Amino acid sequence: MDILLNNKTNRMKNLRLFFAVIVLLFLQMETFAQADLRWYEKAIFYQIYPPSFKDFDGDGIGDIKGIIEKLDYVQSIGINAIWFTPMFSSPFKDGGYDVSDYYSIDKRYGTNDDMVQLIAKAHEKGLKLCLDLVIGHTSNENPWFVESSKGTNLRYSDYYIWTPFVPNEVKGKPTVRGNDIMGEDKYVPFKSARGNYYIKNFYDIQPALNFGFANPNPDHPWEQSIDAPGPQAVQREMKNVISFWMDKGIDGFRVDLASSIVKNDPGKKATIKVWQGLNLWFREKYPQGILIAEWFNPKQSSEAGFNIDFMRGGSLVSNRQGGEFQPTICYFARDGKGQLKDWYDQFIAQYDATKGKSYISLPTGNHDNPRLNAGDRNTTDQLKVTMTFFLTMPGIPVIYYGDEIGMKFLTGLYNKEGSQGDSSKNRAGSRTPMQWDSTKNAGFSTSGFWNLYLPVDKDPDRPNVAKEEQDSNSLLNYTRKLIQLRKSSKALSADGDWQLLSDVNKPYPMVYNRSAGGESFCIILNPTDKNLTVDIPTLKNNKASLVLGKAKGGYYKIGSPYDRINIGAVSALVFKME
Image (tube, rainbow, N blue to C red; front, side):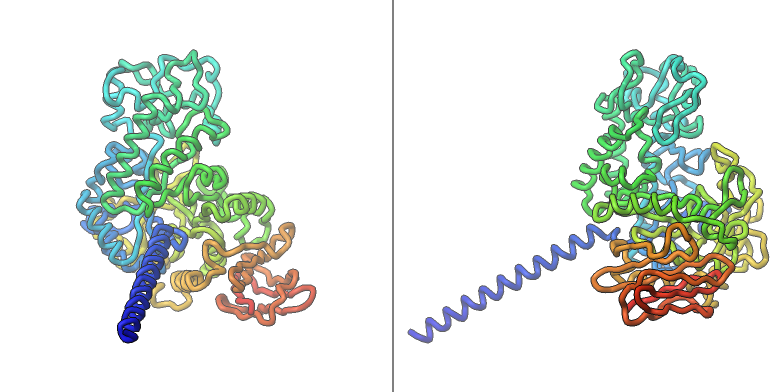
């Protein structure tokens, strides 16, 4: 009897142990699943401008097979996510931001099958992929627009905004940027069965999709509410577009001009409401997906439900003001005439408002702005200082293709596929072919010069990947070290705390602290051509170990009540505080 009872007791213990193991495994699986759903928290993005990255078929324009060929290189930098500028079918009057068919890859890049292959190859290497979703407008060659112009009772009739006249209250008035209060410049003459004008978003060839008006004017029947059938049909169409590509394995989208979809919406309340609905649908259907806003106001985009939003660096990094290239006061210039306060005030307000909710992204550059290597900010040491800033700040880093090797912003280029923009700046200078090696066309393409998408930098000393791979002191290898350090540290991660330690009114050097879970780093940036010394309130550590950067006579002395830091000209130092 005792034996039977003991056996029964043992069976019960084993059963309890079995269930405990099952519960533990379930909890671990749930933890892993949640971590995968929030993969973007550890993302380091690489932005690729597809026509300029790598040409596989030799026609002078980059393509999907060229991208596949270079995935190992992208991964080698430490990148784990890629964002592509638009790759959908387009007449390319604005670099692909004029979409003629959202459901097909443009033939210059390949086919939908090629895109599916790219997704598979990238995922094999642990790389996530995000497409660019141009949600606020299409090309005027899009079949939706063509049909919409023909009548009022067709499928796509209310996908766009048609007017019989330009209202008197906007005549002679310009559009108020940022508030989407439309001026006369938004009304494009177009004789059709629908009316004499349509509303545009950017260029005349980019008719705005109809997401409705924040406060429709009853005297303007074309001003529909956001809940009207037309705007609701547009939302359903965009959900179909998103689903089409998410179902093929894409990991998310960067949303172009996300804040501009609802018209005459100065407080963005109606725009936020529309996005809250779209984001709720997206989260429920694709919990592993990500939506990145081009909103430039993280506080608002976070309320709208986005995971990430960009923040402009302004005079902190810009080398251009007004014309295509006019040197201006910039923080990361050698002359040391920049300032921090305006940027700091904007950043800290956004940082405090979004921390724990969504992420700010400070990209190194993009297809619309000059590169880090621009004008007199052109040496490897200068670029290392700027790269240190971008890769040690909180939030989600985005490296623009070529910035990791110091590709130069080229001036004097011709207008290519709308690169001239709506002002005197020419964006082509940031869109030139990637420089892979010292062979023909810098290894970008085997085509003749006149077939190239844009000219390659003609400087015989231009940087290239092959050359920098072999140089331990290159910007490329320094970028790799920065990324490796960031990935190894909770303090330097997207969620680590950030605090400016230097005086915001004494901008040089910039000193800030990153910390999390008892780990702490002190980062010092000196872009000027002078050695500098600064005192900061003591961090109360016993030791400051230099983990990245060349001292150049610099030092960190721990004291009380101040720590003293010396840093050489044009240098960056990263100390681990222990």
